[in-house]
View 1 (cartoon, rainbow, N blue to C red):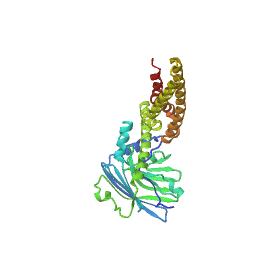
View 2: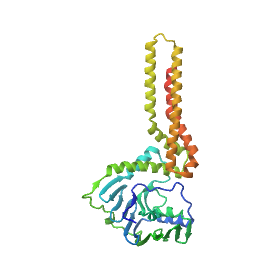
View 3: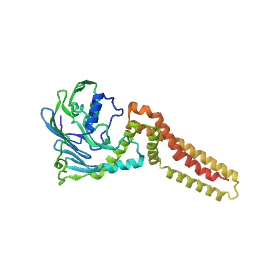
View 4: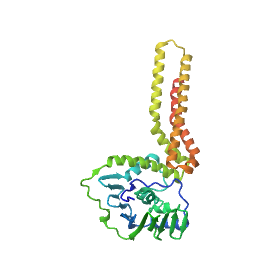
Length: 360
C-alpha cells in the first residue's frame, strides 16, 4: 500500500446524492462541532511498513490547513486555497468563484458555502490506495465531513462505527480517535486541541522556489467543478420548480445560444424573401404568405429536434448531479423545466420572427 499517494480534492468536497438519515446523537455532534472556533488535529496512518502523518487545522472564520504526508498541503485563507502537490503549486480564489455562481444562478443554496474538511473513503486502503482528503467549500452540513460519511454506516455500537472490514472509533468531540481497515491499515490520533489559539505559523505558506505554478489550468478545472457542485447542492436541498427553472434557464442559454439561433433564422428568412421578390417582383402577397408559413413550419419543426437533444443532455447532467433515486425523484419536473425554457428561449422567439413578417 502506498499512502504517499493521495486522492486529494481542493474543490468542494462531494456530498452524497441522498443524504443519509442521521441518528440524533450524531446530528447533535455535528451541530456542536460546527460551532468550534478552532481546532488542530494530528494523526497518523500506517500499513505496518509506511507511516504517514496527517494534520488538519481550522481557525474561524476562514483559515484552514490540510497536510497529508510530506508532499501534499492545502492552506486556505480569505477564500483562497493554496495547494502544494509535490513540485506543483496552485491558488484558487473560491470566494470569487462562489460569488459569481450566486450572481449567475441566484440564491438557491441552503446556506453560504463554508470551509469544510473531508477525510474518509476508508475502503480505499483495501485497494492499495490512500484515503480521500479534501479541504474546500460547501454549504455547511458538517465542517468535519467524516460525520456525514459514517452516518451511513450500518453498525453503530456506542462510539464504534462499522461497515464491512472498516471500524472507526468516534470520540465524543467529533474527531476520529482510531480506525482500522481489515488488517491492511490502521489510523490513530496523536494530538488534538479544540477552541484553543492556533498559531499563525500553522497557516504560513511553504516556500515556492523550484516548484511549478499550475494555477491557471487548476482554476478553470475548479470553476467547472464548483459549477457542477452548485447544481448538486441546490437540487439536493430544495429541488423546487423555481430552483430547477433558474438552473436550466442559464444552462440552456449557454448550450443553445438562442439569441444567435434566432438572429440566424431572421437573417435567412430576410435573404430568402429578398431573393423571391427579385425573382418575382409581381408576386402575389398570398404566395409570399404561404412561403413564410412553410418556412415557419420547418423552423418550428427543427425546435422539436433541438428539444429532444436538450432533454437528453439535461438528463445526463441530472444523473451526474444526483444519480440513482435522487435523480429519478425529480426527473419529471426537471424535464418540464427544460421544456418550458425551450419554449421561452427558442420556440417563441423563432415564431415571432415569422409572425413579424406575416403582419398585414
